[in-house]
Image (cartoon, rainbow, N blue to C red; front, side, top):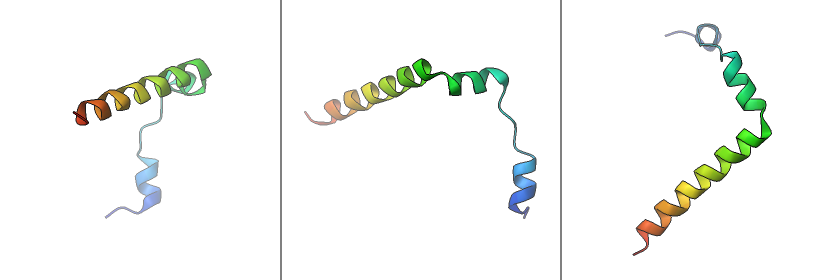
Amino acid sequence: MENETESIKHAPLPTEKTLRSRRNLPFQFWRFAAINFKMIKMIRRGHH
C-alpha cells in the first residue's frame, strides 16, 4: 500500500478553469444557493 506522500504526488491537479471558479465569489454563492434549494426540495418531499 502506498504511503500518503506517494498518493498525493499522483493526484490530478485542478485546471485553471477550476481554480478560477473556486475563487469566484458570485459562482460560489450561486452553488451554495442551488445546493440549499435542492436540500429544501428533498426535505419537503420527505414530509408528506
